[in-house]
Length: 201
Image (cartoon, rainbow, N blue to C red; front, side, top):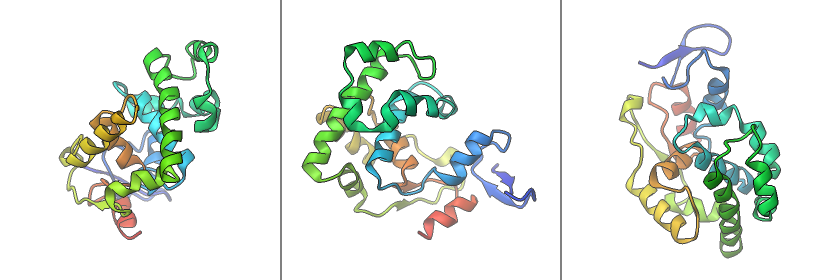
């Protein structure tokens, strides 16, 4: 069952059931960001980094550390993250504002370098990523959140390609989460007010 809500206090609008009205962080993310098409490379890098950090954890855990990640990783500037050396990586592993997992922190640097390589080859990461959906969001029509798959054939392809290019923490499930977050697919359930809004973009 989906959650009913209204921004003006009236209970008359539905949203996806994972976006609890009791969690303002999730509400804001669901209402303003999730599924909105992103074409800015720095924002795409932000979500790539955060989705990798989320592996094995809840998305709420990452959202609550988002400001910490922004500070720790140079406002998600891939060029600056790519230059992080061993000393600075060790310092990050002592930073309680982020997930202090060595493999995830090191993968952020590795992925930043691979990200820059893609920018050089394709002009932008945006151009590289959106070609997987021919430049237009996939409009799904799931009646329930339980119907939404954790991965798809398309995310399998993206994952395989990113791994070949040297990226880490880009399994198919992570890639599908990225695709959902940055709007390559519209996976809001059909009763959610955002599904209709995003389908009309």
